[in-house]
Length: 153
Image (tube, rainbow, N blue to C red; front, side, top):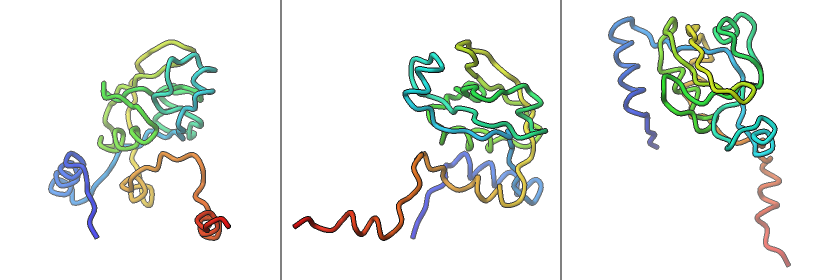
């Protein structure tokens, strides 16, 4: 079995381990979802790039910075957020307390918002290190998968 880790993530973790003995990641404090074509039209967007904010965690860095539900996050420090899977590693690459500039679209207008990140703690760190799944449908049960592959008669 093998797996790959992006070099910038590995180097960041190595530096943190050398400096502090542990790896800490930044936390924005939002729930996000992929933007569907219908949602993009409703929000007045020309495409469905970005991460749609579906919820703000109370007391989080996002709430303190004024991020709102239905904001579309399009960039982090100038790096594009094309899909919902792009945002967590871009935020997690920064240490807690770091200031990041989010490029967002709210009410059809582009704006920049500066956020001071919180710390990602406990089990959330392990979850953030796993690759994000960009699916919106839950996985099918095994029985349904076996049934789908049976030849028709």
